Length: 320
Image 1 (cartoon, rainbow, N blue to C red):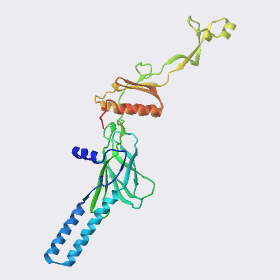
Image 2 (image 1 turned 180 degrees about the horizontal axis):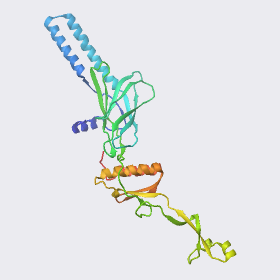
Image 3 (image 1 turned 30 degrees about the vertical axis):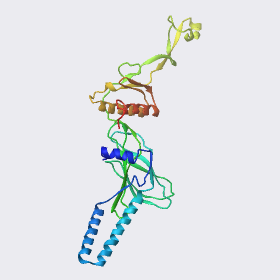
Image 4 (image 1 turned 180 degrees about the vertical axis):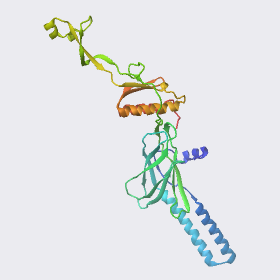
């Protein structure tokens, strides 16, 4: 993890941006464990050459030291000139792994880059074998596990390479200024279902309307004259009125306060599960979150609206 002091220093040296090019200001190099062993071997050879005044050992020591300097240069050059650009990320549920899509390209016209690793802190590393100059931008999905709902800001991404020979590690911490939306984890739970008329229960009722013919009844004061069965009146002299009905659709409200769990996050997870089930069934549904009410609707757009409301419910603005 990047400490607070180091993070402030990096913010000044490598400011957050959706697109970052690696330069001498943003690439750092240091020997790996194998590199430190190699340096120790060089020191041992130098002491041996001094002790025995052996020109062959001197020559071999200086050759290895020169090789080490070349490795340092190529390790730096392997990252320098690469441009990393954040493209997109899809919302996920808590506990799932999301892939931040990052495009990687080389701005060097005559040099390829090899064995590039990219990772968020405490997450698996994504590897890129080679980036060639002049080729189309390479798309790399860098995974991260979502641990809580709301907007997740992953912070700085680690970019590193140990090419060539693994003696030097070149790396950089880049903030691509990106975030993703995390929905509550869907967990099945108990709830009360309400009809759209706010009556308790989920039984379907019929409403008087003009859609389906129900039957006829005796005329009563206030009935529309347009609904009188004039043919029957002409034949039998009876004043009867046609009745129509409109069945109520399977519309319901899911209310956060109706769930039995005491923990708010658990109730949000139960509500998330039921919303997903209602969407699969094609139901028309609304959602109540405290004082906020999402009116009944159906379809993918309504589902996304509801899930976003769940993800951001009582989440502070600075939440990351």
